[in-house]
Length: 285
Ligand SMILES: C[S@@+](CC[C@H](N)C(=O)[O-])C[C@H]1O[C@@H](n2cnc3c(N)ncnc32)[C@H](O)[C@@H]1O
Image 1 (cartoon, helix red, strand yellow):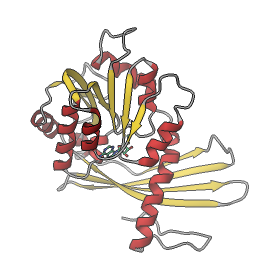
Image 2: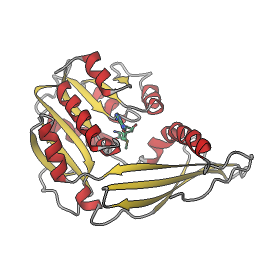
Image 3: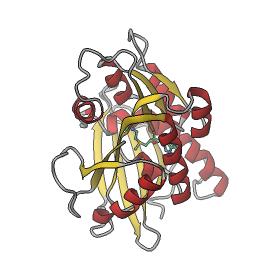
């Protein structure tokens, strides 16, 4: 579903044509990377990383040099930079070059920056070797962005290959059991651009739930408006989120060679997961 047809005062293409849409999608990923940190500014990245360290590398305080963390789907690199600040050797991996470029831009002044790599996950195994990481993390539903269950299985098997025997992983995912029961609601959010206080950014999100295929399509439209000049830009895109349920995660993790140590609601590692919890975390070995 398209939220709106494209209105482009400079006379640009109509995004409903397939050619314009593919151009627009590429453009969307570039632009989305530019706004990603603003859209998710309220997240407590430092708190997420602190809790992850307690679970995947307990008792390592003050003794982390040489401990290697692989951040799968690192996005704009905020978690990877935070892990590096705690003394870990970090590799952030993502499929989107625009996100990696943002991640690399955060490293200029760091003494011990993460390394950011892209490409296919199998290329990462060839590059770093099997059992080359002490810990694996994946924050904010990366697995759900992978377009099919066999592809998710392929990525999990690759992650298992990267992890040392006895090493731990933390995977944060959507809990399909919650979102299939109570469909996500439309949202409108607005921000002021911190780099230009005249610019306002408005994001509309309309979800479409396909329960048979267990996919939630998130239709986004983003408008940026300059309050002083009246200039505006618009881009839109769709993201398919694959809503696996706990039964699927446990099966996929087990068949990929992981042992599930704990399954819990995001941020509450001592609580059981319920259908009220939209986000689940898996602590694995
Ligand atoms: C919702 S973002 C999460 C980013 C980051 N982990 C965070 O917590 O903000 C999902 C990320 O997964 C990445 N991604 C999607 N499919 C991927 C794949 N097959 N391999 C690696 N990264 C992927 C996307 O490019 C995007 O940066």
